[in-house]
Length: 351
Image (cartoon, rainbow, N blue to C red; front, side, top):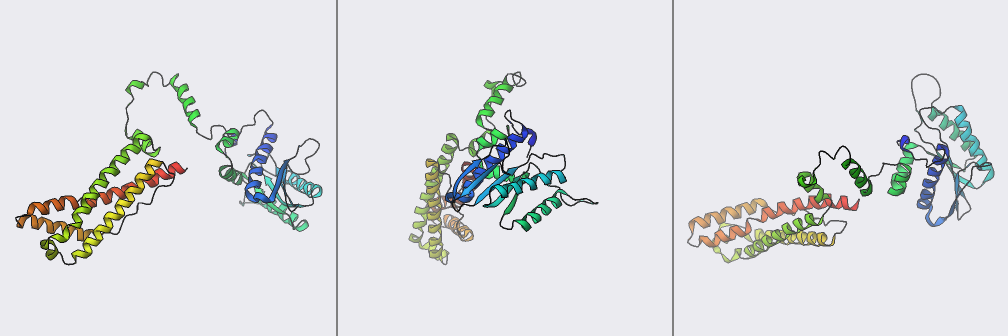
């Protein structure tokens, strides 16, 4: 976490860090205990805080507490700092005997093993935990270091809360407009001409990812065209059995026909779901899975229709069949690409 961006809002850093930790502690308590939590109380530090900055009371009468220490790097945590933590813990136990869990929030990562002699911060923390367990085995001690605080902030806090404590850590449309307006009146002014703005590949990709109305309309148009192609292919496949020339030239043609019919149905269903999702703007795209199609058999069918087109007097009929069936591969490829596009689009919208 970039503590240089930490906003104290006019308070001392120590007080601001305590308030920040209390914010996360309350969110964590409500997420962790749900209906078992009666409430969370915040303690004023003036005249002594009873070893905690905040504590939550459970319906069983048990207490979970939080202590926050503004021990900011690069200074190291020595015996004196850990003595403060231990004293706060002992005070919390004395004031609230039903304490069952004790969190210690620190704006740092504890130093670990290194060459040479001397205790590391991790060594001192482990010693503190061992001594505390020996005297108070029923109390669980949990370290909320920089990594844990960052994870809690990401998992539990809203973007507004993140922006409140760490300015510029969240990009919003308001901040983008403000920064663009500032740039337009300074360094950008002599080189940016709105009338000359053109849409390039970046803009098209952005429209796609943001699911703009224009991007959705373009995708809907493609789906409708592919649906029309599938309709023609399905009709042509249904007519295969009418021609003995085809049934004699293709052993097992009935299985091929059934396979292709199934393919058309699957692709049509996928396109229909995709169209519905795009129109409604749902958050989760349909699963447009590639279907099990024997493309070698389809290739044999195309070659057979080619031969019949050259050899028979009714070649026009077979030429039309081929023209209607051949786009199946293209529709399949389009559906596969659509699946990837919808997955990507859906993950962005859901986020």
